Each structure stands twice: as C-alpha cells, then as structure tokens.
Image (cartoon, rainbow, N blue to C red; front, side):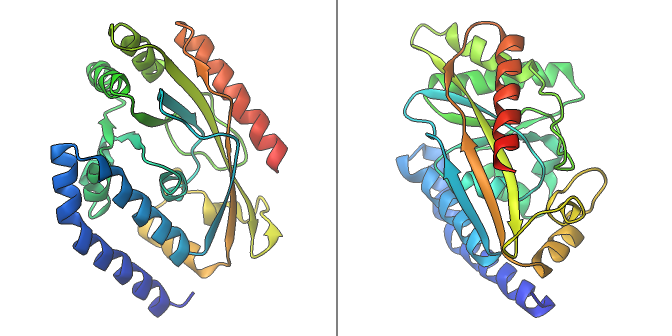
Amino acid sequence: MSRAGLFLRLAILALFTLVTIGPQALAVRFGWSWAGIVPILFHRLVLRLFDIRVQEQGEPPGSDATLVLANHVSWIDIPVIGSLQPLSFIAKSEVRTWPGVGVLARLQRTVFIDRKSRRATAEVTRTVAHRLVRGEVIVLFAEGTTGDGNRILPFRSSLVGAAQAALTDSTTGRVLLQPLAITYTRRGGLPVTRRERPEICWYGDMELAPHIARFAKAGPLDVTVVWGEPQPFCGDRKQATMLAEQAVREAIAATR
C-alpha cells in the first residue's frame, strides 16, 4: 500500500467517525440498545480497508454476563475482536489520552485502568463487576501488555476478581469466563514467520503511527480467533485465570 493509499484509508475512517460520533455519543450517554452497533461497523471497516481477514472458531459469548480473557499482541487485536459482536474492552489509562484513539475507545465504553495503582485496580474491579451484573461482555487482555507473538505471557488474575464481585449482587445468576485466542496465521497467503511478526505485533517501545505505516505496506493478513469453552466462575480467580491461560495456549498451538 502506497503512502497515498494509506492516507486515503485513514481519511475514510476519519469521515466515518465524523458522521457517527454524534449519534454514538448520544447512544452511549442514554444507554440506547444500538450503542454497540457503530463500533462493530467501524472495526469491520478497518478490517476491510487494511485487508485483514478473520476466521472465527468456537461459540462467541451469548446473553450471559461474560468476562473474556484473551491474549494480546497488537493494536490489530482491537478491530479484530471488536468486529465480532457488541462488547467493551479494558485498556491501560494512557489510551484515554491518545489522539483519536482515546475518543473511539470511550465511545465503545472502554474501562480504563492505571495498572501501577492498586487503588485504581480496585475501582476498575467494581466498575467491571457492575457492567457484568448488567449482562455485558467485557474483554480483558489478561497478560497485562502486548507480547511479541512468539510466546504467551502469564495471565494476571487481579481483574478477574470482577467476576467474583459481580456474583455478590443478588440479581446475578452466574458470570462466565471465556478464553479467547488470537493468532495471526498468514500474510499474503503464506504462513507468518518469526521474522515477519514485528510487522504485525506491536509491543515494547514501538511507536504506533510508524507501526501502522509499516503494517499497511505488507499484503493481506489472515487471523484466526478461537472462542474457548465458557465456564461459570468457580470463585477462585487464580485457578480460573490459570485454566483460561491454558485454554488460550492450547488454541494458539493448534492454529499455528
């Protein structure tokens, strides 16, 4: 993709955002039922413009309150997952201040967390628990950061406590934990190699804008998303997190 082609695609995304930002802001503020539709359309537009093809396996979350525990390797994970169904993410607090991205994240009702603050973790746990009580689907990137795509980092269990907190509400029947594995499998029709992963994975101190520019120059990208078997929260967040991590590892190993 040429520089002009990249600018054209970004301009299309900007135009879509300008047209929908007002209605979406109202839908989020007043809790209208279609508030989850605009983010799906936006993410699907991103996938189409950047030639990202998603293969979905397994059963996605249904009507039950669900905390999704996923691996995380790139900014691309957001449009990939966000294109599948109405849901929200938990993201680091810095995302709130990123130009453009922060606004889009807020319009998808992202829950922001300062991972360096224990008090913030407790507040986010309560917020996520409240959202789960309302039957929402929340995606937690359980590694706590992005990885290089060659290995899965250990899943953190602290925010899984939100499932436990949600169960203290008398109106909550059950809360499901569902593993989600994301694997970038093919680039330009060929298997992704270790050498190519830095063009896909976004981690460490990589700058976002240059990474997007490098990513756009390569060919079509195929990604496999595997929904694991949802499990009712057992009351032990560390055990539940460990089981979800194991399921994600097995799914990624099976798709490579």
